[in-house]
Length: 106
Image 1: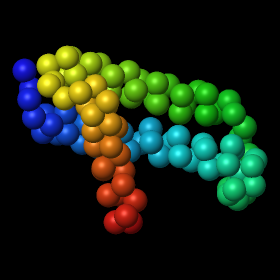
Image 2: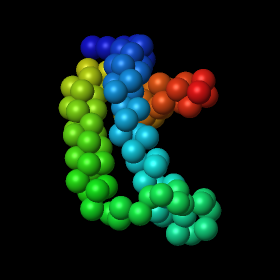
Image 3: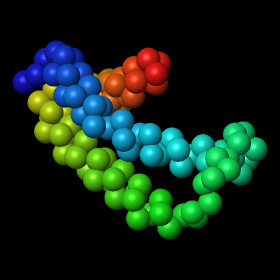
């Protein structure tokens, strides 16, 4: 049984490295459509392709990545001694570490 928080932390930080692409795609979508429609951001003026390209490109990438993340964490969660809420909180926060570092350093 994994008693420490280091195994889920390491696995999710490593999963966060390729996760920068689906996270960026979802962020770009949210900034250009829902938030722009609410008046919270300004839509990219050259972004006029509509929703079909997002359904064909971003949705499968985000869906496959979410499935990969779930399949990697499900057996690890069963072997962990962490409480479920603590485990999933740590996993989600660790997943965003590489994207956050990339956003800060660029």
